[in-house]
Length: 115
Image 1 (cartoon, helix red, strand yellow):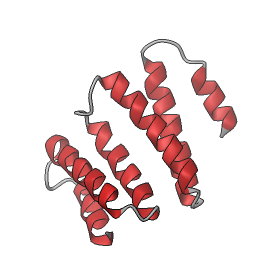
Image 2 (cartoon, one colour):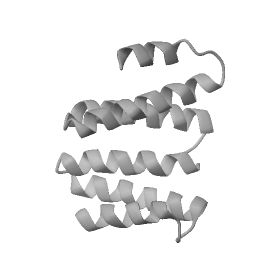
Image 3 (tube, helix red, strand yellow):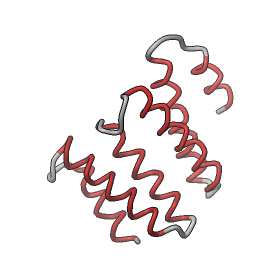
């Protein structure tokens, strides 16, 4: 994964942040699957910050997934209240951009059921 990140870091211009954010997101998923929660948080947080900077706010369809992933990390860290706040943010984002009938909403409902 270090090789993949080093390639993404070479990008120039506007798309650099999105390329890095995607790479950081995948790293976060990897560490989350390996149950390395601190590392997962670090990479999801980097992805969140880059996307927020790129989009100039958090009102974008990509942000719902980041909120959900960070919520999963908080839940795994026994930070249930923080996880719930992020799950609510994810749900709002998904509803706003995709609607109640979208498959992403089922993931959101599962997150709330697990808390």
